[in-house]
Image: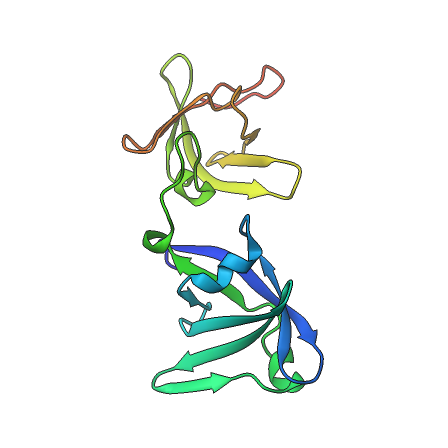
Amino acid sequence: MDQALILMGVIGKPHGVRGAVHVHAYTDNPASLADFPLRDQRGRRVELAWVTDGVARVTLFEADRKIAVSDRDAAARLVNVQLFVERAALPPAAEDEFYLADLIGLAAIGANGASLGTITAVHDYGAGASIELDDGSLLPFTRAVVPEIDLAAKRALVVPPFEIEVRE
């Protein structure tokens, strides 16, 4: 997938027999997912129309065709379809907030100014985010460990906890 695309949600299992699906949104307000210009991993435009909380009807756009998903079998074929939005379509982050995807590729600089590598991934499994450096080191994404981020300069000050050894 293109780096400019941000994963915003995923389609889950069918709901009923008329083509509705469960949708798992990765937004603060799940209902707002339908307001974004969504694309799936194949590049098709996807529109959502909410039926109830977490359940939506899906319309796919392929070339010049509009395909409304209207039965359970078609809905079942959409299970695990990822929903992306172009980074440019997202609102700006508030001050002192970041889109986790914006951290990928930043240079990790130690407190002494030495390079610790590059942030290659950001993981968030629900208990708090962590950053992964190109040497495989995993560090918690907290104010204590990453006290300073400069997106314009493409760098982050990283102060690993004393328990974690990062190769310089």
